[in-house]
Length: 255
Ligand SMILES: NC(=O)c1ccc[n+]([C@@H]2O[C@H](COP(=O)([O-])OP(=O)(O)OC[C@H]3O[C@@H](n4cnc5c(N)ncnc54)[C@H](O)[C@@H]3O)[C@@H](O)[C@H]2O)c1
Image (tube, rainbow, N blue to C red; front, top):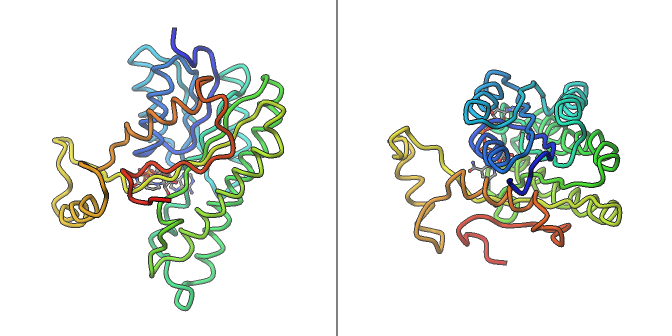
């Protein structure tokens, strides 16, 4: 029996990190609801979990749309007969590409980043917390970025909104820790996508290799690095870890 047997967990984001984490949680026995803006992506992840003998369902959720976030939480409660875990791993992917410095950023892009990355995370937590209390407590994780500590010169919205998640995490930990809800924030370094043969895509190879060379580590990050950490933090083994901002970056940010 896995350490998450019969725990109901909602994972928002079915991309590189969310997909790997959903699969890892299900391998440990969790009943996983996978939600993504692109429902075909959540369905691929949920199907692969079911094909491997795990329990999962797929739904849609736009991190900028409170109605869909509430619906995703409701679906997780229905599917898992309660809610014990929430991993808010989505971000506003469309506007992230249009981020800029504070002089040049389009204010609509800034506002949409705040709306999705910060308010969307807050709304999801707000929807989930009463169900977690009713289920006897649980664990909330969200995903920041090493950019929140080491701000890139030509992107302001992404690092600011990621840094805001640290405060949101500490708030939830301080307010609901005594009632059995833990909240922690993951701060990953770059986890590059790979080709099916494991290589970096040729147009990004030099950039990714340069990044790895900056880290005091022997290799690049893998989705499994994050997924294994998520599984541990969701489990009772991590019961005394609350309100922490947890780097997972090969030592890139030493603080
Ligand atoms: N991969 C990395 O190197 C890295 C590093 C640091 C932090 N992060 C953070 O990790 C999280 C996941 O990143 P990833 O690498 O898995 O990204 P990814 O691009 O592989 O997946 C992101 C997912 O978000 C979905 N998405 C896009 N817009 C959305 C919206 N409006 N509402 C809901 N879902 C939406 C996409 O469909 C996609 O499936 C993000 O919060 C990202 O900021 C990633």
